[in-house]
Length: 377
Image (tube, rainbow, N blue to C red):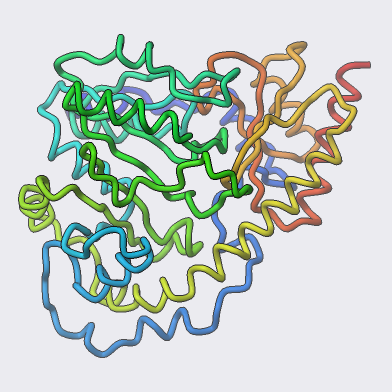
């Protein structure tokens, strides 16, 4: 059988993946699923799926209007429900936008470091990616000089993750001004992935929380229930599109109609409960962040400064490669991500989730500290 070049030629496991499969971890610091992290979900969540109106099929390419109106309220009324499109996930949102903006072989700009899904999603739509760097010494600010050098006539969009995953840094107001200028001059739409935007750790007014409502340049804002409500299993994402893209995006959406009626009908109630879930998860991340700082204080490792999100980046001594550090942590029963998973420019980093239950998290970071001590003796 012949397979498309859009799928990998080999699916062989890496050395690290084989180690992980052979040694199940006692403490999983790669946890990204809030539904198994011990949070208290409101009792009304399942009941919201019982709306009898879901028994009637009423397809709408953009999604059920009351759900879109609830999402517009979630964005503080800065966007119109008419510009909102419901999808089954942020990944699907990206796929629709690649179809909307790109011809096969076109390119998109993605941040580095960042979550390692863009290459896969772009490849599945016949699109290539170029990684624009974030400058570590400038709190992971966009390297606009490098970005402009990377942009070509076949570059069709710029992806922004705000706050970035895994660095946990938000776009700054000065970056927004420069971004607006570049976008207008190069006629380059921006895709702003804001799934973690509700998880800020400071009130710094220089931080740009969202591009929803931005009108100076074309912006597609992506979000969903997965992170704000801690409901990845409900499979509801959305796109806030600029007015000039609505008609064509509706044509694409009408070919898929992906979101089930019960989920659309439940969305307004889930969004009503979202602030409580966001705050509960945010409080957990701050408790665990404090535990990580305490455990690593005075050690040979350090936590990188961050402004929000669900994870923390630990800089490790370069006496071992990242892969070997992660293997050493695994010997102690702790699973963490190596920095190269997120395409950091240099070594050595580990990325740890702040979602686990606080007791388990504290034990895990203490094991990381113990590993550091033993390896540096």
